[in-house]
Length: 393
Image (cartoon, rainbow, N blue to C red; front, side):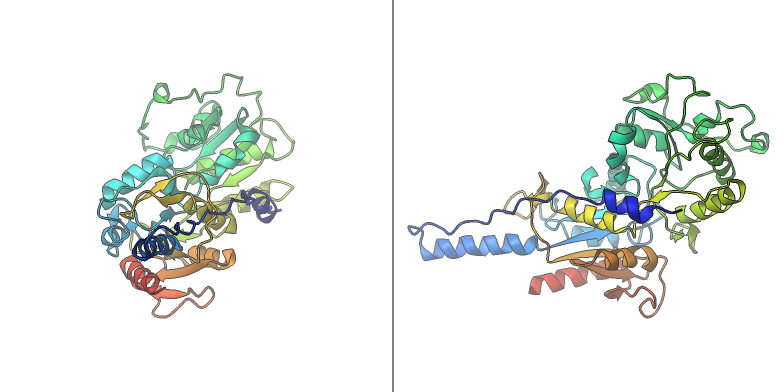
């Protein structure tokens, strides 16, 4: 039984924000020239923030670690002379595996543009909303990168990577002796700001939830151990019990990486796990998927974009508290019709979808099932269209 909609809608509640106070009319003692200047500056400010942009990363901004489609130039066009942004924008990706501040630093280095951690919205970013439920509970996290570190930085206090959890059970992976690759640990646990090693007896303590933070590296081992956890009610080696909750950071079947053709994504792993679990267990797999095209992700992006206000008259912006500023248009620039375009369409107004031909989509015309509002060759073409359109509005 899939519960994506039920839980997704429950998590999609966002705070209603107070109206943005507009500048009051200038005092009568101001000259007409001064009044016109103030009104003009106010109108420019409002026009500047009447729209925002969300960029997908893989297949739009980067292919692997290489910028594509003129992405550095496109992003610089959204910056002021000081290097700070004059147009609110975020990166809205189903990828992940690293904390947002690490991903922001990586993007800044690759693109030559300063990116704030708050501008990076990854597939697993909504997991923060589950902190109150699992903060002190034992949870297991899996995926490429550093899934346990990601969850610990969100505030979860008792989290183990699936690899570390499995290492506590002898012979849990019957083919491990034939795996000759070695994994280099990126950092020692002593380097973590929090102690994420559970102090309880792992063989008697129930795992309360499993989080698939990013694309798993060893599908065979992950499917085996996750099935063990879910079938046993959270205590591996036991029989029966209620299935612990299972959360996926995203559910896209394919994505564009460095290889010329598409690669299987987190959705493919979910299909494989679900197929196996439903064969070995009497009840169907229950799970919740986040990431695009979930409309919650787009509403969350809109809320984040609303937290950026003008920092100065030169067009930069600063991060601050939530404000209610209804965008006239929010542009989603992506390469995957099934994820980026579908999500923007389901989110509705004020989202406007732009599909590039640099990733999953390569068609000459629009996509038949999920047509975008606009199809362009590259992200640079998309930004050019946006700036030309908004300058006329």
